[in-house]
Length: 163
Image (cartoon, rainbow, N blue to C red; front, side):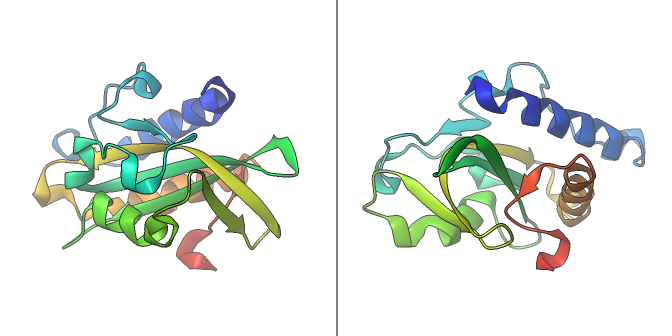
């Protein structure tokens, strides 16, 4: 998934910048190196049906999640979705709500309504907030990252507040 490395690097910078606004004991802790090689945080979705993929253990928690894909008509055009699971939800429940209709499909497909193109989704990254007392940070971190990625001109499948 090297094609998404630059996006991942920007996400890591965004999380580190977000942490600057938090007291040290509230900061989001992640192993920022090699996230794409760690099945706890990253799942590759190419040619795997929804009913067949192994859900990463991080899905049990709230947090911020991402899925990456490309425009089916222009593979050089990369897109990213940023979502969150907070309060009584988990990232697994949120991802299920995104993909359950594609249960038998071999490829994960979506549509970017803002750019009016079809997206083939290849990967999913999970940033869990394992401490339940800190799950309230997920919406703030999601909006912070969306705003940051938009300012850096990345093609987002969603916007802050879905606006």
